[in-house]
Length: 199
Image (cartoon, rainbow, N blue to C red; front, side):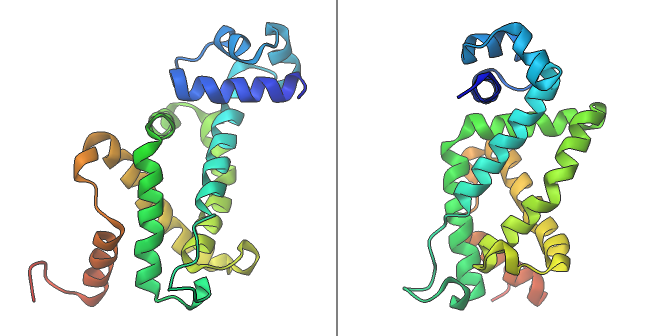
């Protein structure tokens, strides 16, 4: 790898170990083996490099979530019962959330910075639609290329809202997280207009 790639990998490590706001340029240099001047040369600033690190980390995490195996007893993923697939995919995502707390903490930290950091907000805003499209593809069991743009916008926002909420909840009450089946049951009840506790 060249210095540019080394710096990005070092920044991603610092993101997990120290957090977004607490990482200094010297931390990145120590983690990457590059020199201080190379940050400005390759990225313009430490902040620009950290923005790239949070986006790259999120994309890598999303790509790994997209590897969820087919659901439905060997049937094609798209042929599985929608609520069964919904529950199974969330179980896989929730497992990742439970075991990758440093990544989740960094994601939640960044959410708190968005109102006061225009550059960070704009950088994340640019990739948000792609993330929604990827989530729709995972939950529907189809390739990204087959996701309808309107579905990516509307349904992708729904999945992103659930994911963000579950990340925050995992840091607040890790021992009281719902299961994929719980989320599927909640979705069924909401869409059916059922009163909680009704038979």
